[in-house]
Image 1 (cartoon, one colour):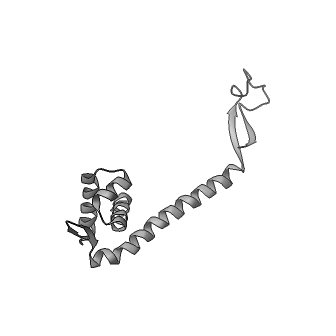
Image 2: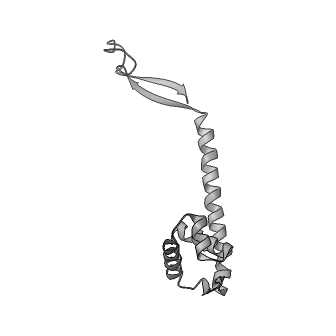
Image 3: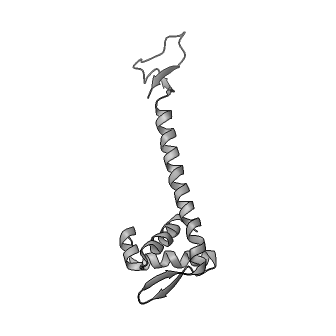
Length: 122
């Protein structure tokens, strides 16, 4: 099971048509149909009843829709938390090790180690 398959399932459930869901997800209809088929095979249940007027959730589809939405919301929350942490970490000082050549010296003086610790805030 892949996240793209869950996104496909949720989008098809929202709009009720494969063609419109494919447009909204910027996919071709065959690609979206393939994702749905792979998800159904992975789960071992049929998620939609297909008809000429569109697609309707089966009982299994209705039961699993909330779970799929919850997983996608959890992924979004994970991304937001990671971005928040990235912002907090960017404000902390970080140590950078630089060789004397990188600092513009040809050779380190005899008493100076070949590497110096440089502390800077990024």
